[in-house]
Length: 122
Image 1 (cartoon, rainbow, N blue to C red):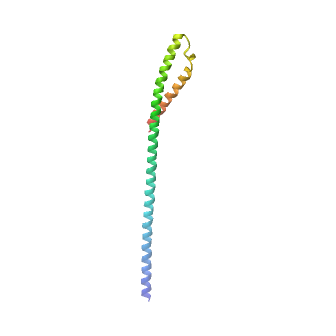
Image 2 (cartoon, helix red, strand yellow):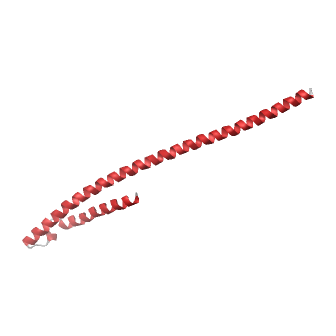
Image 3 (cartoon, helix red, strand yellow):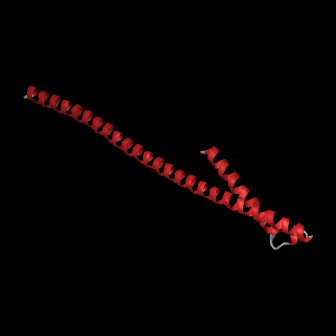
């Protein structure tokens, strides 16, 4: 009877060690699953950032192209207005909103500068 009890105790102890080992293995598997999910989320976030940066780059590029075109048109109109004012013998600033147009021209230059800074940052 004592022998049988000792055998059962030994089997119970072996079973506890086996369960302990399985518990550690399950813990490692859970850690692996958690880290895989974490990496997947980080990769998705990075992809979203790349998409957003590409969109910003394209929007900025388009705004800069539009600004260059508007700047060119503004410079032509300013030149024509100054020439016409000179021919008439009046101050160029007295011609319509010419002074306002010059100020807006500075805004267009700021757009291009901002785009260039953005491109260096990217």
